[in-house]
Image (tube, rainbow, N blue to C red; front, side):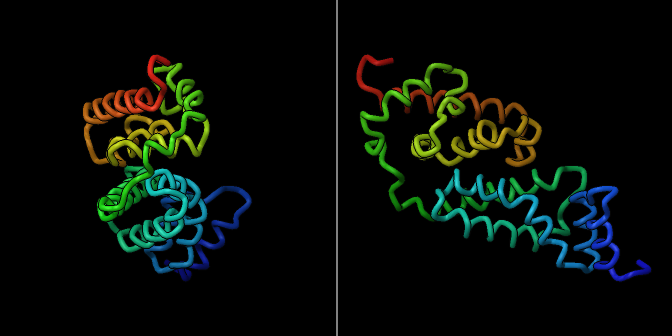
Length: 206
């Protein structure tokens, strides 16, 4: 480059004519302007934080998100521009959170008993559309508790699909698996979620 990387990319970021792309920011970081990574964090922090919160809970989400961005920074040269940076981040975040859940496996998850009879009406409403149970859980606290009862892999794929709204291709990239595997996991995860919800409801209510 004829100019220092920071000068080049900072001017492009500030340009009123266009918004610099994630890939251009990454080029700038790899060219030597590490400060530009802060813009990538700013753009994607909310969604990474949301994924971490969904998989680990709000209390651990901030620390997990920081770890994810540190890992992403250390591996930035491994990023390939043929995939979206956000999808690449999701893969790192997913793996980090699943590893963390395995480390914490000895600690009890939220008990299903915490879903009291007072919440059963909302759970029953979640079953109104049996093909999309996760989306029917509109209460954020209740959704967190219900998803917490699922195995980590199923919780992850439901979060990516129903909460984050990723399409099948993005999920394939984030979870590094085939389309058939994505469809099969989603089918099993939804079935297990419906079955879990039914166990939480009073007998004969479904």
